[in-house]
Image (tube, rainbow, N blue to C red; front, side, top):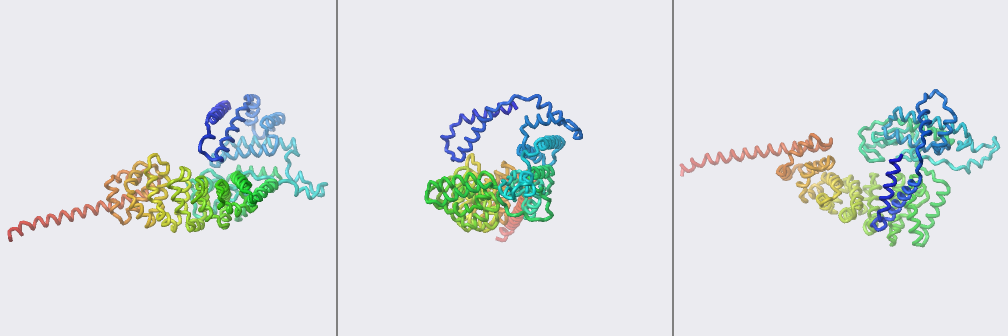
Length: 564
């Protein structure tokens, strides 16, 4: 604890010394810096002395057999000192335990199981001592037979589902949570549909799944059941084969009213009101999933799309960033595209401020996750301005443009458009610029484009072979893999590039890649080595034939001379 306080103080001191208001950073980043700094300052003022008695009581209870009834006085002291006197506090503690379980890959082990049992003892004690404290809805809202009024049910605020209890795909309360190989938890039916669609990445982290097997998350299922019980909700039953229902928001009436007021400002004729409302919606949409659903349900998307063509650059920036944040919700992606947003987003990408262009590119990337949107975005003329941003943008802008272009070029029809927009020379420049941080992205896009005839021709014309050979020899595992993939397509049916790569000494690096590379890298290296071996054999045969013909000609020379 002391070490944490020391680190907190050092971080606060270091952050305070930075004149970030003089740096060329966005208002959003400044707000985040101010928030973090204020949190550090508050943390400095909350220094508690170690509580030896608390530690000893906690340890004694932790080590007791589950069959032994704990002393109520000890439980009361623990609950008070740990500030676990309400259901909300206990639920938050349960969530922290869930995070620990997730980090273990679903195998909690004896320590976490003991902690879970200890928390359950405290929870049972708190509910026994205070039966009306944070009581379930069914107890707080007695029906007419108990002297209550039916209208009380309607007036009671519905509990907000904790984010950790929602499936990251459907955003609904999980009924049958399972853990994938990255440690993330999803509703079983949702992740199974994702895997059945051919995806092999984790939807939340985008990491490659090492296995498609899923493991039941029993601890989280138990925590969800406890939360449902505490809030008077029927615990979810494990479905046999039910499709997830449409995402709905758990926003309170007050929050919905606030959103409606902001939407009224968006439709007002006042540029100042529009600017401030768009900015607030941008931040609300960033905050959580419920807000994103509620804002879309209120009808904000068409209004924000309309503001993309405003001459006010700041309003335009807020509007496109709000759409970016809203697009995180899967249901909203379709609504944004169907509202005709894509041409307007491309308009911002062409003429907006640099931050607006960056966020427009990021929005196109988010929307292009859905395959049919790749076609729509490609047909809207988005690719040339993305290539321009890739060439002249800030580092962040280049990253946003690269991810959007990569996603769009997965669709075969967009590859030729990207090549004709001049993306290959731009990518080659990013590969060779000193201190460039875009090598990963550039090679990934080149690997996709090299499978297209126009892409292959453009890469060959850009004299890419020396760069590719250098990366195969000295790059990161992923970059070596992509460089080899480009070279495979480049050398297909074209011995000119094979000869050039051989002269540049590619054989040694290829042998190493075939032995020590990624799985895909090994396959590409093996293909290249096979082609290289055939090429070398053909060269030897051609040389033998040439030498034989020379010898025959030399043998004929004396007889010809004698005849003359």
